[in-house]
Amino acid sequence: MRNKLRYKDEEKKAAEKLFNLLKAQTKDIRYLRKAKERLEFRIATEAYTLEAERELIKKKNKIEEELKEAMKSYKLKKKIEYIDKDLEELNKKIAELDTQIKESSKKIDSLYRKLYNKVKEKPAKKQVVNNEISLADVAIIKDKKSSNNQNNNNEQK
Image (cartoon, rainbow, N blue to C red; front, side):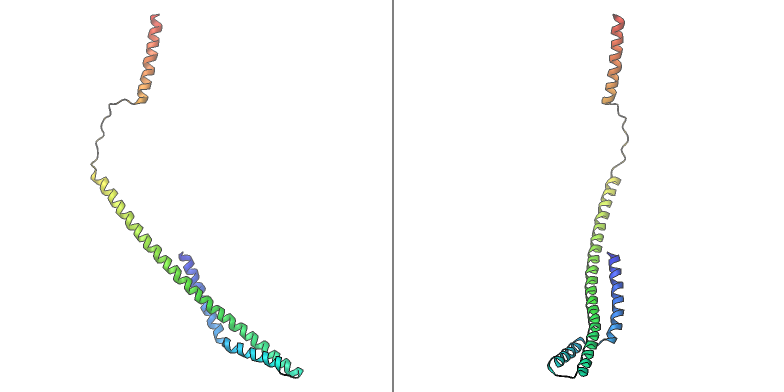
């Protein structure tokens, strides 16, 4: 998440530098569009000599190129705005995750303290010697007794 934040931040810095370079070189988009429309209207409605019409078309093409450059600047400005929105969202998500981490950490600490106190409260039990016989021992004893009984029976016969 933080890597994405750093990436977006660097992307914004680069876009702002490029925008500042393009902004100084470009003209107002509305002005260029109106100039282009006026030239197109003049070319379409008025009668000109071939030479004069070519000059108007060259001017129109030049204005279209300037308009393309201005649009690049405008699109870059919009991209910067979107990056700003993304950065805000990422910062909000990081803040939320940080609060969740802190809450979870507090819960874990309290549970650990409870467990530690319970373990500490219980006195150490002395190991009681177990005089009981396990089931496995009984089976082995029976096997020994049964084999002894069989040996005794065989000897008596």
